[in-house]
Length: 442
Image (tube, rainbow, N blue to C red; front, top):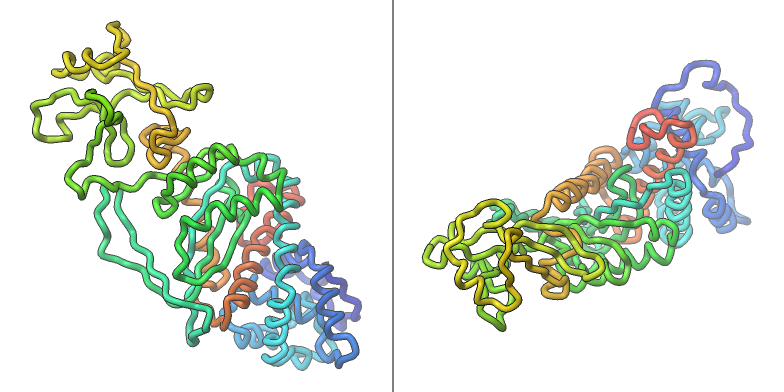
């Protein structure tokens, strides 16, 4: 953390600080910014020091904490708020004359782009710090992307992004989101709603190809946190069979990613589980294992009955299912065809079907798509949506005037760093239940 040495003409400590100033002070003290401040100070060595590096940097962070959309808004706040100037470290003897002009912050933004590795190091340091404070941090992960629109400019490294939304039955909403700018790919802890890893790309970059690189980066940069990960929830935009298989087999993380309906529109929503032989076992459009209980029924919803899910057999790497007629008393008019299948034995328990994960990695995962366990785990994906909402509504990323991807990455990275620093302050104060609070920290 940066150290301030100038004396104070009037200390706000003799009166109660406002909650926002108290929160800002705790966040600034929690930032591991020593290396970054040293690099900024070294770059200024031998030049005029009208505006101290530490104070300018701390006020720049304050702009993100307080959600100022532009530098001009931050400067206005600094000039009118003496308490804020003192916390940032400006000389109180100079009053509002100590506040830097806009070009100083512009140069600082460019310097932060050049020292992006040190900004990332701050983020990684805080992730490890929070992980050391919270033993279950990183156990349940969620991932999603977020639009980062740019207003008032058309940077050369930005482009147009398009996102379509599909309902649960596969129909397409009329609303299609389009924006010009960039995209934030964000991996968060679903319990504490805190960032774990992120990446800023052009807006046109698809979601699914960025999943595994971010997981690989998590493995490289945060091994203890990576070892804790058990599940990863994401929406249909990340539905890729190879990624799901690699996520489970290579990283030991169970994917909680629903499969897209790729067959209803073709007119054949149900397909045989094993196309090499005649059988009554079929697979629905989103991976539901069903039995054809009525071969003469023209309506598919009445002709097929979902088999009872009996759990995942880790030693066999298979999903186990039981005959719906024996399990739930469903009337079956196709028993003769079922008995003709190989390895089918009579019994009160009914027929048992085991489906290996490799049958179709996109449809069949260690957590069965149509089980209560999946539905419960998938609800945790909304954690990343709430983090995205805070980035927009609290830190002002919804209306940004950044002029390059590097500047946007700095802006988004600082917002995520602030979330982690706030959480660390709460935990170290012994108030773990408040790690997601955005008001007064500790």
